[in-house]
Amino acid sequence: MAEPRQEITLKCTECGSENYISTKNKKAHPERFEINKFCPKCNKKTLHKEKR
View 1: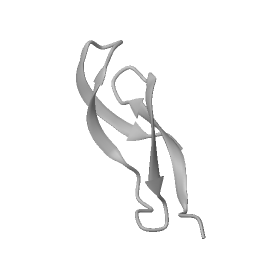
View 2: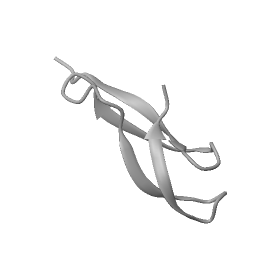
View 3: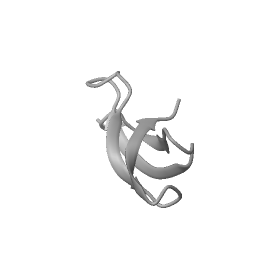
View 4: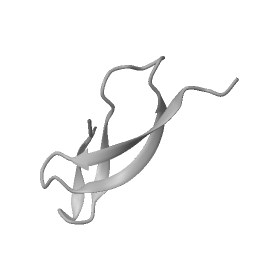
């Protein structure tokens, strides 16, 4: 049986660029994923949220 992992896109909260693709287990963690990552467009670390 395969794990219920799905690809998610991470979007910068400041400029709106979709910079990263990751995976997560949506059954274990149904809430939206948030992480500080480097945004090449803003040229600094910003909060990235899971795009719906």
